[in-house]
Image (cartoon, rainbow, N blue to C red):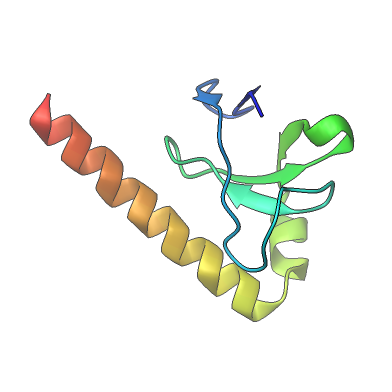
Length: 84
């Protein structure tokens, strides 16, 4: 799967399931590891940025898991910046 983050334009060439398993499907949500944007897989697995209303409509446990992934992504990017 090769796709670009619609927020930061970085190449996203892999995906992992935060909750659940298997390959992403249309409607699944994810986090850009580079900028932390909350994204949704659409038709043809094209990524788009979630609206605030869509984020608020997600179940609380999903929002909590996405927040953890955003934090991990931010820490990863901070560490990467320190090393370069």
